[in-house]
Image (cartoon, rainbow, N blue to C red; front, top):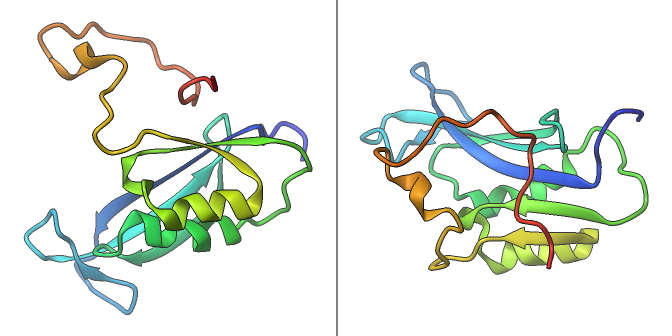
Length: 139
């Protein structure tokens, strides 16, 4: 498709409340065990969602990696693709999913410090303009 930036992809999950319950809900570990769902979304370089999977809020991100990548609504063009994920995907399941599908994985491992440690301190943080979706540049 024209306009879709396939070179950089990002995968992340978000937990939301589900007060009416249902089959795809689970106890939310961050909301005192109330019912909730997790949306795992694969986005292209400009932030456009390409795949979405819904599961219970208690399902770890790494277990939703393969189902989310398999839920692409269109096939990606041939060529290298950079895949950016956070520490929640620091697992063999995510690594093997990237390898099988030919993605170059950009993963900040657990225990690795942030490059911009000052951004965590609200007193020293300065307002920044929104930037396009990018993870660390490849070495």
